[in-house]
Length: 186
Image 1 (tube, rainbow, N blue to C red):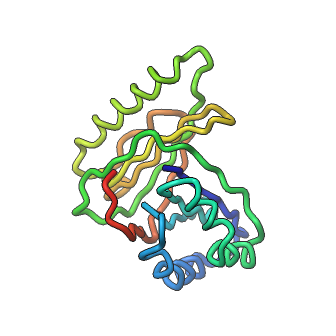
Image 2: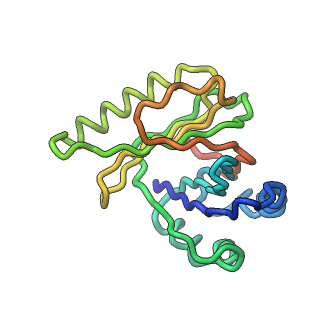
Protein backbone atom coordinates (compact mmCIF):
# COMPACT_ATOMS: atom_id res chain seq x y z
CA UNK A 1 0.00 0.00 0.00
CA UNK A 2 1.00 3.58 -0.56
CA UNK A 3 0.04 6.66 1.46
CA UNK A 4 -0.10 10.06 -0.24
CA UNK A 5 -0.79 13.60 0.86
CA UNK A 6 -0.65 17.00 -0.71
CA UNK A 7 -1.07 20.28 1.13
CA UNK A 8 -2.59 23.34 -0.47
CA UNK A 9 -1.70 26.61 1.20
CA UNK A 10 -4.76 28.84 0.93
CA UNK A 11 -4.72 32.63 1.16
CA UNK A 12 -5.10 33.97 4.70
CA UNK A 13 -8.51 35.47 3.89
CA UNK A 14 -9.78 32.32 2.13
CA UNK A 15 -13.30 31.40 3.18
CA UNK A 16 -13.22 27.93 4.79
CA UNK A 17 -16.81 27.42 3.60
CA UNK A 18 -15.43 27.16 0.04
CA UNK A 19 -13.29 24.16 1.03
CA UNK A 20 -16.27 22.51 2.72
CA UNK A 21 -18.32 23.13 -0.43
CA UNK A 22 -15.54 21.58 -2.55
CA UNK A 23 -15.45 18.50 -0.31
CA UNK A 24 -19.24 18.12 -0.51
CA UNK A 25 -19.09 18.33 -4.32
CA UNK A 26 -16.16 15.93 -4.75
CA UNK A 27 -16.58 13.30 -2.05
CA UNK A 28 -18.96 11.14 -4.11
CA UNK A 29 -16.21 10.73 -6.74
CA UNK A 30 -14.20 8.75 -4.21
CA UNK A 31 -16.97 6.39 -3.17
CA UNK A 32 -16.25 3.22 -5.11
CA UNK A 33 -13.00 4.62 -6.57
CA UNK A 34 -10.90 1.72 -7.81
CA UNK A 35 -7.86 1.00 -5.69
CA UNK A 36 -8.59 3.56 -2.98
CA UNK A 37 -8.41 2.11 0.52
CA UNK A 38 -8.94 5.38 2.40
CA UNK A 39 -9.22 9.13 1.87
CA UNK A 40 -9.51 11.79 4.54
CA UNK A 41 -10.51 15.29 3.47
CA UNK A 42 -8.54 17.44 5.93
CA UNK A 43 -8.32 21.11 6.80
CA UNK A 44 -6.06 23.01 9.18
CA UNK A 45 -7.80 26.28 9.93
CA UNK A 46 -4.89 27.96 11.73
CA UNK A 47 -2.44 27.46 8.85
CA UNK A 48 -5.12 27.58 6.11
CA UNK A 49 -4.09 24.19 4.71
CA UNK A 50 -6.33 21.91 2.71
CA UNK A 51 -4.51 18.58 2.86
CA UNK A 52 -6.27 15.37 1.71
CA UNK A 53 -4.65 12.13 2.86
CA UNK A 54 -4.94 8.92 0.81
CA UNK A 55 -4.10 5.25 1.22
CA UNK A 56 -3.95 3.38 -2.08
CA UNK A 57 -3.99 -0.37 -2.61
CA UNK A 58 -0.85 -0.16 -4.72
CA UNK A 59 1.46 2.13 -6.65
CA UNK A 60 -0.36 1.62 -9.97
CA UNK A 61 -3.67 2.86 -8.53
CA UNK A 62 -1.97 5.90 -6.97
CA UNK A 63 -0.24 6.76 -10.23
CA UNK A 64 -3.49 6.36 -12.18
CA UNK A 65 -5.17 8.84 -9.82
CA UNK A 66 -2.42 11.42 -10.33
CA UNK A 67 -2.94 11.20 -14.10
CA UNK A 68 -6.75 11.12 -14.17
CA UNK A 69 -9.44 13.80 -14.24
CA UNK A 70 -9.94 13.89 -10.46
CA UNK A 71 -6.40 15.12 -9.85
CA UNK A 72 -6.56 17.36 -12.92
CA UNK A 73 -9.36 19.13 -11.05
CA UNK A 74 -6.94 19.87 -8.21
CA UNK A 75 -4.36 21.20 -10.67
CA UNK A 76 -6.91 23.38 -12.46
CA UNK A 77 -8.18 24.87 -9.20
CA UNK A 78 -5.00 25.19 -7.13
CA UNK A 79 -2.09 24.50 -9.56
CA UNK A 80 0.06 21.37 -9.55
CA UNK A 81 0.97 20.71 -5.96
CA UNK A 82 3.76 18.64 -4.47
CA UNK A 83 2.52 15.16 -3.54
CA UNK A 84 4.31 13.37 -0.72
CA UNK A 85 4.23 9.57 -0.66
CA UNK A 86 5.13 6.89 1.85
CA UNK A 87 5.27 3.09 1.77
CA UNK A 88 2.67 1.82 4.23
CA UNK A 89 4.11 -0.74 6.65
CA UNK A 90 1.33 -0.98 9.24
CA UNK A 91 -2.26 0.18 9.18
CA UNK A 92 -5.35 -0.71 11.06
CA UNK A 93 -8.75 0.34 12.26
CA UNK A 94 -9.68 0.89 15.84
CA UNK A 95 -13.22 1.86 16.75
CA UNK A 96 -15.13 2.09 13.47
CA UNK A 97 -18.34 3.03 15.29
CA UNK A 98 -17.12 6.58 15.85
CA UNK A 99 -17.13 9.40 13.32
CA UNK A 100 -13.62 10.90 13.32
CA UNK A 101 -13.44 14.69 13.48
CA UNK A 102 -9.72 15.10 14.22
CA UNK A 103 -6.58 13.89 12.44
CA UNK A 104 -2.92 14.09 13.30
CA UNK A 105 0.05 13.56 10.99
CA UNK A 106 3.45 13.07 12.58
CA UNK A 107 6.70 12.81 10.65
CA UNK A 108 10.01 11.92 12.29
CA UNK A 109 13.46 11.04 11.05
CA UNK A 110 14.46 7.37 11.17
CA UNK A 111 17.90 7.56 12.78
CA UNK A 112 20.62 6.34 10.37
CA UNK A 113 22.10 4.03 13.01
CA UNK A 114 18.71 2.37 13.56
CA UNK A 115 18.16 -1.03 11.97
CA UNK A 116 15.11 -0.50 9.77
CA UNK A 117 13.40 -3.80 10.60
CA UNK A 118 13.78 -3.19 14.34
CA UNK A 119 12.51 0.36 14.00
CA UNK A 120 9.45 -0.69 11.97
CA UNK A 121 8.65 -3.47 14.46
CA UNK A 122 8.77 -0.85 17.20
CA UNK A 123 6.29 1.25 15.17
CA UNK A 124 4.04 -1.79 14.89
CA UNK A 125 4.14 -2.18 18.67
CA UNK A 126 3.25 1.50 19.10
CA UNK A 127 0.33 1.06 16.73
CA UNK A 128 -0.89 -2.08 18.54
CA UNK A 129 -0.92 -0.15 21.80
CA UNK A 130 -2.72 2.82 20.22
CA UNK A 131 -5.41 0.53 18.78
CA UNK A 132 -6.63 -0.19 22.31
CA UNK A 133 -7.88 3.40 22.61
CA UNK A 134 -11.67 3.49 22.00
CA UNK A 135 -11.34 7.02 20.56
CA UNK A 136 -9.01 5.95 17.73
CA UNK A 137 -10.64 5.32 14.38
CA UNK A 138 -7.62 4.50 12.19
CA UNK A 139 -3.83 4.52 12.32
CA UNK A 140 -1.25 4.34 9.52
CA UNK A 141 2.52 3.93 9.86
CA UNK A 142 4.56 4.42 6.70
CA UNK A 143 8.04 5.47 5.64
CA UNK A 144 9.62 7.68 3.03
CA UNK A 145 12.69 5.96 1.57
CA UNK A 146 13.99 9.22 0.06
CA UNK A 147 14.13 11.17 3.32
CA UNK A 148 14.16 8.16 5.67
CA UNK A 149 11.25 9.48 7.67
CA UNK A 150 8.48 7.69 9.48
CA UNK A 151 4.92 8.89 9.08
CA UNK A 152 2.24 8.28 11.70
CA UNK A 153 -1.26 9.26 10.64
CA UNK A 154 -4.23 8.82 12.92
CA UNK A 155 -7.92 9.65 12.95
CA UNK A 156 -9.62 10.34 16.27
CA UNK A 157 -13.09 10.94 17.62
CA UNK A 158 -12.08 14.51 18.52
CA UNK A 159 -9.07 16.59 19.49
CA UNK A 160 -9.62 16.13 23.24
CA UNK A 161 -9.47 12.34 22.96
CA UNK A 162 -6.40 12.13 20.71
CA UNK A 163 -3.24 10.63 22.14
CA UNK A 164 -0.29 12.93 22.74
CA UNK A 165 2.05 13.10 19.71
CA UNK A 166 4.99 10.72 19.97
CA UNK A 167 7.32 13.03 18.03
CA UNK A 168 8.06 16.71 17.84
CA UNK A 169 6.95 17.30 14.25
CA UNK A 170 3.20 17.05 13.85
CA UNK A 171 0.26 18.84 12.30
CA UNK A 172 -3.36 18.57 13.31
CA UNK A 173 -6.42 18.76 11.07
CA UNK A 174 -10.16 18.94 11.22
CA UNK A 175 -11.67 15.99 9.35
CA UNK A 176 -14.22 17.23 6.81
CA UNK A 177 -15.09 13.80 5.42
CA UNK A 178 -13.78 10.24 5.28
CA UNK A 179 -14.13 8.11 2.16
CA UNK A 180 -13.58 4.39 2.45
CA UNK A 181 -15.11 3.20 -0.77
CA UNK A 182 -14.21 -0.46 -0.72
CA UNK A 183 -14.37 -3.15 1.89
CA UNK A 184 -10.71 -3.79 2.40
CA UNK A 185 -9.16 -5.87 5.10
CA UNK A 186 -6.05 -4.15 6.42
